[in-house]
Length: 420
Image (tube, rainbow, N blue to C red; front, side):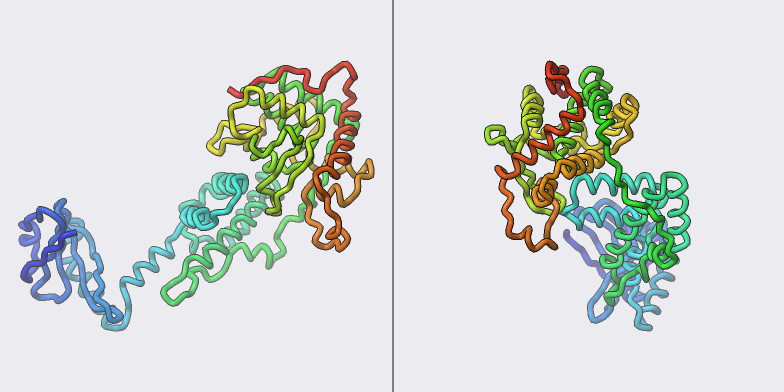
C-alpha cells in the first residue's frame, strides 16, 4: 500500500474536515503540537486518529479511533493518556491485545480447538458440536474468563436434572477439555495463561461428579427374534428413504461387533468380496484390522452393493457422506419390538454371544479389536484372517439360531430399497 507523508500541521476539526482523499493508498498528517499524534486518511475517504511512539525499542502505531465517531479533542486526550502510560513503562498495544485475548468467548475457543485438533474423528466432532448447541448454547458468547466455578457446578446440576446424569458428566468432561486447551493456547506477553485455572476442577474437588455405572445392557437371546423382525420391517415399511439401509446397518453391527463409527465410515474400497474380507483403516485404537465376511454379512453386502452409488457402504444425507445418527430408526425398532437397545448394545451382544459359545479369548479380542498389551501370551499368537473365519462364522450361526428363522425363509428376503 502506498503511503504519503505531508508536513506537520495543527490538527483541528476544520482541518480534518477539509482533508483531501489520496488517489491510492493512505496519507498521514502529523500534529505539529503533540509529537506522535496524527490523522490517517485512506483512498476510500476513511479518517482515523493514530499515535506513534517508540515502545520497547521499536516504533509502534496505535489506532485511537475513527473520525467523526471520535472527535479531534477526544483523540488528543486519548493520545495524552497513552503517552503517560508509555512514560511509566506500560505497553498500551500489548495491553489492548491482552484485553482482546481475555474477551475470547467459548465459541471462539471451540473454533480454535477444532482448528488445532486436526485429527478429531468426524463422530467426535459431531458430538462436540452437539454439546455446544445443547448443553452450552447460552454460553457460546460468554468470555472464558467470565465462566466461574459456581456457574459450572450449577450448569452441571441443571443438565443432570434436565437431560440425565450421564449427559451432565459428558458435557463437563468436554468443557474441561476445552478449558485445558484454552489454558495452553491463550497466553500473555510473559507466557502466562490468561486463565488462572480450569473452573470444571470444582466438580472434582467437591466430588460432585455423578456416579454413573457403566452400561452393560445387551439384547437377550429371547429378545432377538422380536428385534430381528422389527429391524426387517424397516425394509417393508419405510419411515424414511434410508430405512432399508439403516436396517442393514443394524444387522451389520450385530454380526460383526464393530463400533458404530467403524461401520458407518466403511467404504466399498475397504471390502474385498472376492476374498470375503473387509479392512478397517481408522479404528479407535488406531490399529488397522482385517476381518472375514461371514455368509450372512457377505449376502447383506452384495445386496447393498447393487445400485449403490456412494463410496460409503452406509451412506448418509449429510455433509459427511456417511450415516451419522439413525435415531428415528432405533426408536422405530424399539417401538415395534418392545426391545430397548442402543447401537453399542449390538457390539456387547456380539461379544456376549461369542463368550457363550466358548470362542477363544484371543480370537474374540482380535475380532473386536481390543488391545492385549497386558497379556504376555497374546503377544506370541498371530491371528490372521483365515484363523478368524471359523469363530466369526460360529457367532453368525448362533445369532441366526436365536433369530429362529425358518429354513424356507431367506435372511434378506424383504425388498431392499436403494437410497434416494
